[in-house]
Image (cartoon, rainbow, N blue to C red):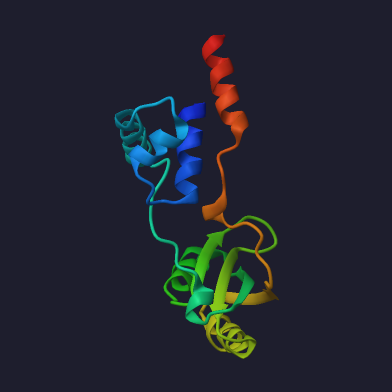
Length: 164
């Protein structure tokens, strides 16, 4: 497990504001760490798989203004195959396998609700192994995974562990 400190958290939070922010700009904003140290920390976090820096496409900008969460109940021996099939569709932005009432969770984007309806009833439900779907239109997303920030308490816990 990667051990975050307060400096790493500040760097990550600045990169969340702007993933293209240069090490020199991060150094300038933080004021107490060199550009070289910033570059080293970013490289280390990337190499260890802690962060990735990439473009995030906004589906709404391309006309895909409708989002829907679809939960699938699937035959037990088909869960991974169905999940992989869901991940192959262009209008699916998220696929996860779960434990509980539903086996797979999928997020779908579409240009209108009729397209969501068609995709769920004529595509998803016809995938071999799918037993049942439950769909919910998502009008507002307040926080998405790419907006998640490292909790400050992680740095505090790491600092406390170092002093013990």
